[in-house]
Image (cartoon, rainbow over all chains, first blue to last red):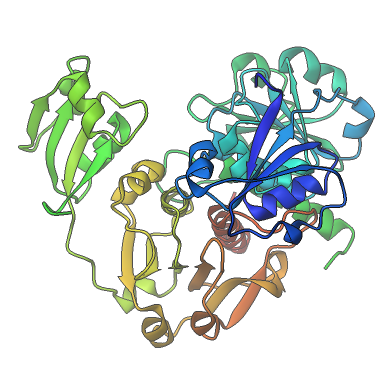
Length: 235
Length: 235
């Protein structure tokens, strides 16, 4: 944070950030890793370090052979035009970095390119978020905003993952909208729930009290993807 | 392991195990927790311990006020009749305890009551698995088996989450079957992949290389749930 950098660990993730618009500050690798594999065309600091040093800087129990420090970009500005004719995930107070990273990875799989987070959502450059996103963070725009003031001005349908809403399997998501997911323990805050124009529920058949929030987000992404496939007669 | 016990942490989870067929060995709580909340009718050892001791026995960064030791039951025997007219999840080498626990919780939400695991799948009584399952472990039957010898004798369709399979949104899952999910890094083993009768793929619209295995499992559970809802004209 002090140096404006975040840490990316593992060959595949480092490679995704090298090949992205992010600015890689330095790459650290152990002797067992051949840096030629990176096919670096840009001028990036490359440091061979000991396994012991890698263990010290790693956030993982089993450190990888390679990690990188990447510059934290200036926060992107929310561009209303980029949200039209698309779906955007809105996270209201997600706390668990594993959930956050998995949501980013899942959004990237389903072609959702933008996520808007409440100010108290976990920091997207937290090492565990970056790890769980498996490189997808390099492609997804993540905005932090005051949801209560921003959402009403976007002019988009606001779907909320809530209890006692419409069955997700019968919901017509249309061509654009915001999908609001709430905090792991307490769900969507009342002041944000008031902005929801369509409460949507994943029907329960068994006994679990709730679904993990990354799982619930994926089910929304999947239904939206399936709907749009059906409409264009996709494969 | 030595004492044949596993650890359950937090009020809700402990309550679910008390109200299950599992045998709770002892309950440990700090002074801030009122054990009357448990409404114990059975004779269970109840110990008040210090916050420091709770921190010592907990696997969590922020320990709960209450935890319990629960007896590891003898492994259930795979009962072919119980697998008929139902869907069963099969896990081939899942390693991450968080994924395993989330899969158990998700199965419980969608009314899937049985999971068959390869012998090298993470131990279901690992503290992190129990934690991520959020009490659902108390309701789900988890079997460990040699998948290569067991699967062919069940006489059920074997759906496998694989690349280049049939589109999951167009797959007719029918009324019963096994859903095979592979290891986080390497997928389904070749000798198990040979037993798959229908390879099924979650279509990708974006750039992520893969989906988290708990997410993929949830998408299969959801499609099966949706299909059966449509058939019975459910809500």
